Image (cartoon, rainbow, N blue to C red; front, side):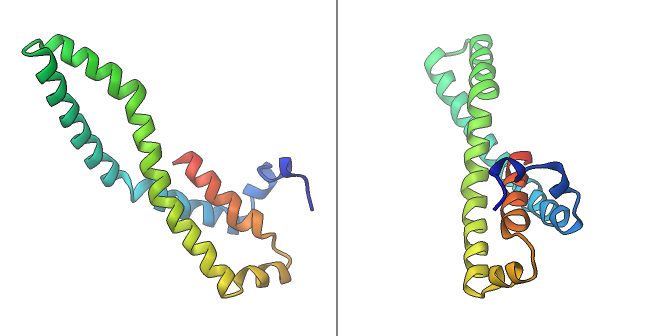
Length: 130
């Protein structure tokens, strides 16, 4: 077995099958979840604006300053990451479990393809890039 430091080496990313899996993972994780993230972001922003308006009254400048500080710097990246992880991790786990049940991973090993480089690395890379 190779050391774990070589899992993310550039030579694995140059292979066409790994690039194809990475591209599909980026599309599924990033592009297909944009609408969901936007809708949740709009709803969360509206809730926070309503709460800030209730707390500070008619002071629009204070509300906008706190909204920008709270949402853009702290809450938005955290909520986006949680949505992507919750949405994609279950799909990845069920896909890999189905591959294990149908013995596709064993066939990959028999063909000399490393399941870690072909299945795990593109999925983790796709999640990080998305």
